[in-house]
Length: 364
Length: 264
Ligand SMILES: Nc1ncnc2c1ncn2[C@@H]1O[C@H](COP(=O)(O)OP(=O)(O)OP(=O)(O)O)[C@@H](O)[C@H]1O
Ligand SMILES: [Mg+2]
Image (cartoon, rainbow over all chains, first blue to last red; front, side, top):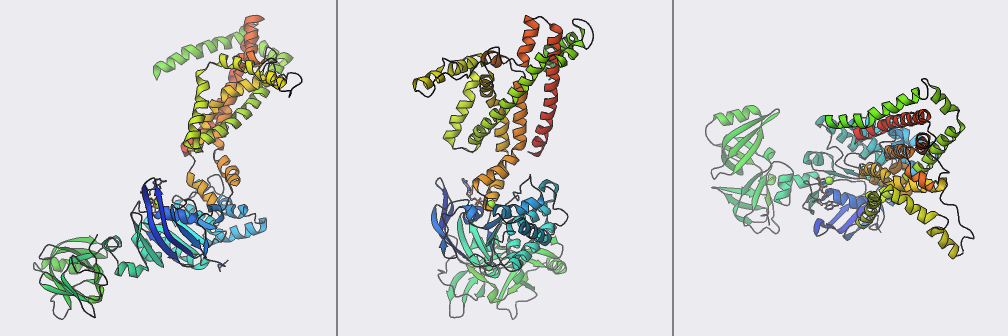
């Protein structure tokens, strides 16, 4: 079963869900490609689980429609959707052995004893549970329970696998191990994966695309690099990681890009602007794209700032800085460089390439 | 805690030791009464009937209570309210009143038989009381609420996501019920069954009224031995046997309830 015969393609159009007069999900339109690894990312209560439950068929959307491979599946009940699901907390059957848990979807489908034995055996092997087949879920560690949940959800070769924060209960190293395993399972099965998390590092590492949610709204969808380096708004920019933001004044656009004033410097950005009005616009630059230099000579964009503090972080140190007008910035630099900057007692210079900056529209 | 233990000691333990002493001293010292108890065909048949009745009552009450608890936990708010009302109201009516209520309903000239005859369904009245059937009906009715509570709590503790998981894996409703829901509430079923069985063993009023003296159960036999024939020794020996049986069952009950509490 190395090759999936079929991976689902999903089209959600204007999907909304209300509980009473509270909208947990608002007018969501999203296409999920065949065999893609889509991550739903957002803070707690943003509607990620609600959307996953709608995909699985456990929740009926209040508005909108859901198409799978061109067929309307909005009214289709969960038991007919052939979607594997891994729940937060795994939801294993506590009264069944590991083997019986994994065999359950096959038994339900009335597979023959032979087929069940073969597929369960292969799945047990694949998720590394050999030797634990006869145990009950309560006798397993968190990581092993996780593997049972994955095996049970994949054994019937679903056209789509839905995972709701599967790693939130695991410690860091186990989590990284399981992430690698899920990535491998995705490669091997070729099935469409929809993965929920509120951990942006996890999302960036695993996904082919990321959908960012906030307050029931889909803010942006794109590949990890796109959403990280070209966030559409301030929320996305801040949610995906550290960001330095500078208010630009007198923003003007030309054919190549845009430029605006910050304090006494002119700042250039490789962005054509689209619908930006030019007022209250922020320039965003990821800290790792800014460099600490001695002089602004030869740099397109440069900025003077005073080091104000440093936080030691092992492989790198986080240097805190403030510009003349009091805008706070942070930078991740080698520890020695941070110490030297702090010792210099004068302003230091930060530079970055115009293509590293992006414009953030004023928040509504 | 201490005053309660003291009260229980004087109210139950002391009298029980008195009864236990009678069982080995009356009419003369020795275990003669226990030998008589084992050999006496009447006592044997009463114990046998008691177990038979208790078994039927347990099965009927737990099955009914399972349905009631299911609606109570998973029904719509209106269904819940209705069921709660129906379960709680009988609690406020004394066991005596309820037994006579069943007589009024089931006796030869009771509601069921007279309606049946008027409508021409029955040519002659069915014997619904003054036999084991009547006893089982009355006792089941009385004991259902006691089974509802452990079952409802087992069902409440069940993780909803496990049922969703089963559904998502393609299981039909009946499949989910029989292979997930019932096994996961099994400790509750066993607990409820033991509670009902133990309560049923000691029943007195209901069998006395609905059995009409023909379906004598152990508790009634003790009463007869002590107040009517007077044979205090045998009566005491029967009591002690009953208490020991209940004790053994309670120990089993404890074993089944404990792991569930620890897991929940
Ligand atoms: N059955 C329900 N009844 C009422 N409100 C609900 C229900 N289910 C979800 N909500 C609300 O909808 C919103 C979105 O919930 P959802 O579970 O989708 O969030 P989430 O993004 O998965 O959050 P988390 O990361 O905490 O799991 C929340 O405000 C939640 O309180
Ligand atoms: Mg959630």
